[in-house]
Image 1 (cartoon, helix red, strand yellow):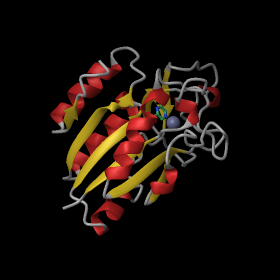
Image 2 (cartoon, protein in one colour; image 1 turned 180 degrees about the vertical axis):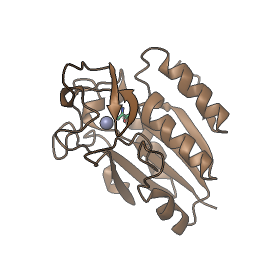
Image 3 (cartoon, rainbow, N blue to C red; image 1 turned 90 degrees about the vertical axis):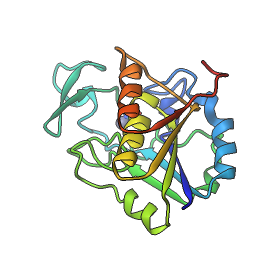
Image 4 (cartoon, rainbow, N blue to C red; image 1 turned 135 degrees about the vertical axis):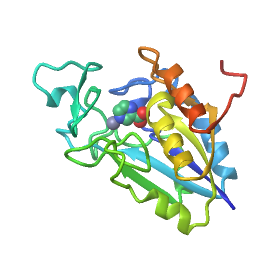
Length: 204
Ligand code: VGL
Ligand code: ZN
């Protein structure tokens, strides 16, 4: 069964200079391009929020970025305004070879919910359709890379494992936000879900 490469949210706003920058987020582009060249099924995801998205601190009275608040009835981190639909920040990093993509999946598009995972919105039930796409392509395994390792990459990998795919995260092709121990927590949750974390040894 073929493996799909899922490149999560390699967008300007998650790279240095963006609205929600991940340290060295842009450094993974060459390796991601190499992985794309070798992959059988290639999926790119794009965080793609409406301008007043409830995951933005600015959409909540008196909230500040990186505090917590209710989004779609569940508590989560509230973020700076990022990846607004159609903005330069929501565009892919210009070095990413997007022409190779079989599928570009946009997530976080709802006015009510956020979506860290590429498979389900954060209510854990509303599907993005990715599982159906991968199954129809005969995919049995998924490699996940991109930004941010401790948020959307981890959520995507964990959901893929729960859905029955063999899952590996290629860590040298990821970078993390890592606030308040979020990277250690994400690593533990991925291991618990049966995700293989491949560490390159070069980057950390
Ligand atoms: C992400 C925070 C908010 C991500 C998306 O792609 O990891 N993080 N929205
Ligand atoms: Zn987002």
